[in-house]
Amino acid sequence: MRRRFPVWEWAVIGLCTVFFAAPMLAMARFALQKVPVALLGRETLFSRWTFSGFTNTLADESFLPALWLSTRLGILTVAAVLVLMVPTVVWLNLTANNWRPVVEVASTLPYIVPPIALVVGVSALFRDVAPWMVTTDYGMIPLYSMLCLPFTFRTLDAGARATDMRTLTDAGRNLGAGPVVILMKVIIPGMRTSITAAAFLGFAVVMGEYAIASLLLRRTLPAYMVEAQGREPQGSMAVALALLVLTSLIFILLNRSDRTSGRRDTIGLPA
Amino acid sequence: MTTLEYGHVTRRFGNVVALDDFSLTVPGGKLVTLLGPSGCGKTTALRIAAGFDIPDGGRLVMGGHVVSHVPPRRRNAGMVFQEYSLFPHMTVAENVGFGLRIRKVSPATRSRQVSEMLELVQIGHLAGRYPHQLSGGQQQRVALARALVFEPSVLLLDEPLSALDAQVRTEVRDVIRGLQFRLGTTTLFVTHDQEEAISVSDLVCVMKDGRPHQVDTPENVYMRPATEFVARFVGETIEVPTPRGRCLVRPENLVLVAPEEARAMPGVTFVGHATSVRFNGSTCTVTVAVPVEDIVLNVKVLPHQATLTRVHDEVGVVATSLTYAL
Image: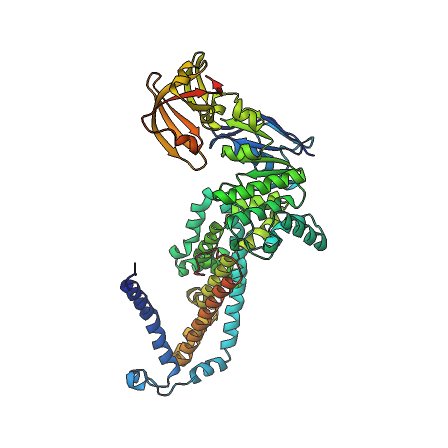
């Protein structure tokens, strides 16, 4: 039987595309056209496109230090989160399934606790015990790690559940491997896709986090961009757009590399 | 060759007794099957042999050494799992070579042994593939190669054929039996499929409620069951009245004869009417209702014999041998 044209499915896809694409197109026009906002219309669609806002921002001496700080914080946060969460997820899936509700609730804390409460709480608590938490850039890593938990925990857990971890572990033990070898050679490679996705999500969270950086007076990339918006709104928007495109490209590349690496997908990413 | 012995092993899960004073000896080089319904404790017995479970009481002896508390990685037991359990990120060759790599076998020797083993299970041409690129039967052959390549003292098979379709199941079953016979590895095979158990084993241990009901050769288990449970669980049986009380008889031990012949013959005979004739492929089943005894007999006959019988015909049935006296 011939299937009728799926009108509703395409209507939903079309609506979603417009919902996401329209603001980005508007963003691109604002950032890359040297036309006053009031005149941005159909008749000016092709006039005065330029990268000058973008290049001006790149040339700003404060931009690269802010980008570098955010990148460092992103890498270190991802490392901290993976070191903490991969063994936790393995432990939950292998032996401590009854602890899952506790970890799930803990991982949603960043949704419940607002950044201001987090920063004030941490400052009050650690000012005397561990002053570096408040005074250095790296003090933000534990806070950012917390912020990443909802995304990283769920992604890693989905990956762990998709692999039959219990039987694979039994197979590894039976073949003579100890716990460390099983973790490093059997479990972690089996969860590679979900670990990569979790790392990417964690990095994206750090690269976009503004509230905590602003409250702690750190000049990360988002903090710089908010500040630059007053001086060079188009340049700031162009950088935001570039980051968005870069993020999307990385996401697509990750998916493609997983699809072509000759193995089954282990998390919910479409492959 | 390594002997595996369970000595009065007990294992409880809460109030459930999975193994109850379970004793069994798997002689060196033999293939012994644990056969029983779901929940009879056969998988628990296998997991204890592998070291994944520790008995609450009793002991497990492998090659003369008590190994009840020895961790799995130190037991040198190869295991094939029901769900294949191949490492998805490794190729076939890497999967098979994993146990050798753990044992620090040099790459050259490892490569040679892996190739030899893959040839033995007839999948040498698939060495570079990933598990998800293989069929179920091929995956199970890889699992078998992986379990045997490091020359384990004992091979443990946990329902390795249950996820396969009928034709592939027979092929893999023959590969398992052929390899076990050739390598002489002491093997414990768990299954709930009686036909599988009877066709591959040197000895069959029929289990129920965590205890062995009979440990014997497949022929004896089938033809001379020790208990009513074994008689009813292994193969088909029909309960019939005899001059010495009720007995269980196998359908293939019932023979169709002319009614007069049945009336004239001594022994266990019946006269009734054919109620259906069913074609099963290589055999036919003639169902005979015997009103005097109030029983229904399913008699297996060859197709050409079945053509002589029509529904409502009066027929005689003779039991050539009785399987178990109740």
